Picture 1 (tube, rainbow, N blue to C red):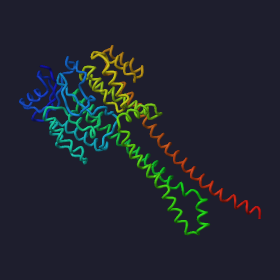
Picture 2 (picture 1 turned 180 degrees about the horizontal axis):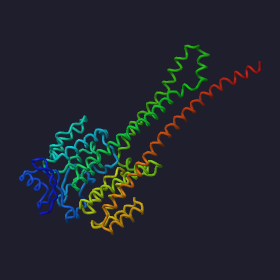
Picture 3 (picture 1 turned 45 degrees about the vertical axis):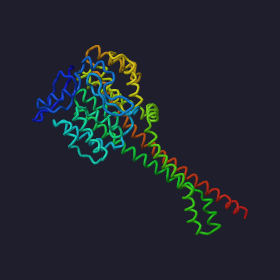
Picture 4 (picture 1 turned 90 degrees about the horizontal axis):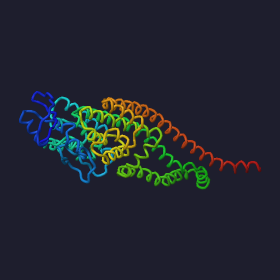
Length: 428
């Protein structure tokens, strides 16, 4: 028998919390139903021996997708092997944000999870198709995160991990709200990025089509040989010459969108991204802010540090950072402290490690982590503003360079045509 913490709803909709001694999560769910409650979340009591010794609890990388159980009753969330946390969903961020926002509101109202999922209404067929399966898993006594993990193409790894952290901390509604807020910000960033990248693509394609038309020597030679009727043929010929290159560019952009979803490519890109000026800091600061925030939430709820680290390590949205965090945990004893794990991960500034060490000695570790989280969050916002300004400047510079190049090419062909005429006029 083990101790389990639970969150349930009574017949009036009131949310209750408690601890129960049982043989497993399903037994806790059944006992609550017999008492007239609907279970919303069940997890081992934070700090229990079984929670402490379970290294594999929570979202992990496994060879085959599907839910399973770890010793001690903590639900594992198994994900396709090697799926990086930064791979985006096949569903738009705005649609996912609406799903998580609706679910957060319904969960906060006190309704059971399976009932809340029945009331979700979003205009995306992939999300709606996943809901019945998730309802079945929850009614069978599994967690929401386990149901979501069966649809890695719909629910990204970082979102599943964040849901699991919310379940562990007993703050599922807050976790769902935070996921929705992050996805709303992602949708906004994606909109700006698509506008800028779309303008860049249009500029490149137009330049490719205009390149043959910039050679006025050929145009004037055609007119001299065949008259004005040759102008139309010249333009059509020039467009047909440029068309294959334009098609190659469009196909490559589409193929690249799929290539960068390959795990090893995505991980490599994440490593490189951290080294890119401006944007590297945006992603690094956001990853650090997210990790410390989740650690603060879990440890404030009484979750054992090693279990909290295991859960929080998949919430940063950079696979390079997440990989270092998980490696530090998997290669360390289960009783290793937070400070030692921070040092072993090798992704944190020494100032952060020292601050956490001071918080650990003074018994105020959650408060210290919250302070570090807020600092990184503010720095991330500041860097995002700089990044947007830099992106706008680079787009303008790029378009200016192509414009100058086009003008130069036209001027050079005019020069090649005019110089012989001027020389002939001078001889006369």
